[in-house]
Image 1 (spheres, helix red, strand yellow):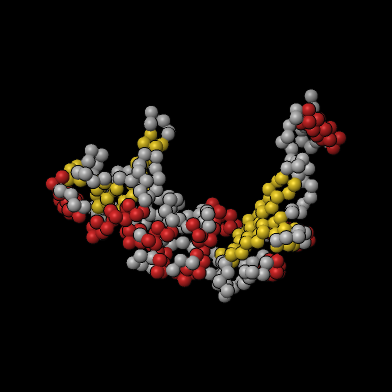
Image 2 (tube, rainbow, N blue to C red):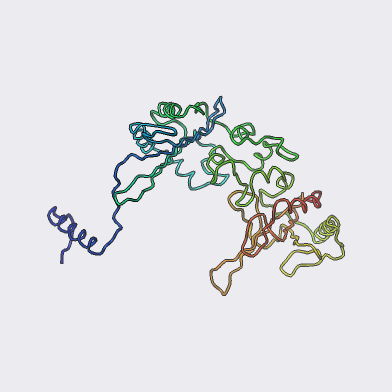
Length: 368
């Protein structure tokens, strides 16, 4: 038996490596990496995000290059080698790694660093066994550009002159900046403005440009897209972005629920206590609670708004089947209306479309 203790002599190390290599080959193991034929791809995809106040309004540029090709956007092998090497060697600041861990609206580094943009490349290399291997690099830029970045951008602009990346001062989030990046304008917001949206749902430039699926498909939560938020803005403006807990009396509670029943066209005399807490109105898919005595757990998914979640554990085990409820607060914060369903998907609960919830909201708008 060969044992390795402490520093292994070179001869013994080589002998051990030879034995291990033979075992791998004899076992037919294919876990060792297959070498590539060359280090320069036939095609190279490049994408640059420009988070600065570009005078020409170009905030992103994507180029699919053909290396030493006859068609398409052509680049030389030397240019491809330079681009790959340059992007690989960009050293990201610590805050870039922090941001990747938190795509939510409220990040610990929001406002602490100037986001300047990003560079992303990907390509395939042919392996010696006839297959392909995928490579990619994604570098986020904060506070200051890496050395040689201006020359790098100059080359990208020369490769494809259709859209020129012009570097300027870092963008600061505002309604105007939001519109510049996304193309959304105030006239797309029902009874409101993009500035109002940002006041209620604060985000920063990094989040806007890097949220999964890209800003064109920006979501207020995992199911609801920004176009829905703007179309049904009065309702989203009423949804809770902070937790309320206000004391109230039973008489106040009863009066509020009866007023709610009238608003919904229901019989106020059909208000009753719910077995799991709160009150219900016959024929209406909702439960009303006093916020000082509310069951369930407040949660939000990805971003906001808050919703109530009932967690159900079965057979005494750890399997969790959740039921989520979109909620509205009364103006004084004393009461919460939990509808039978949620804008977020849940295991047990119904999934409500924004248009459906908006119809409900219009009936109770004066009470929330």
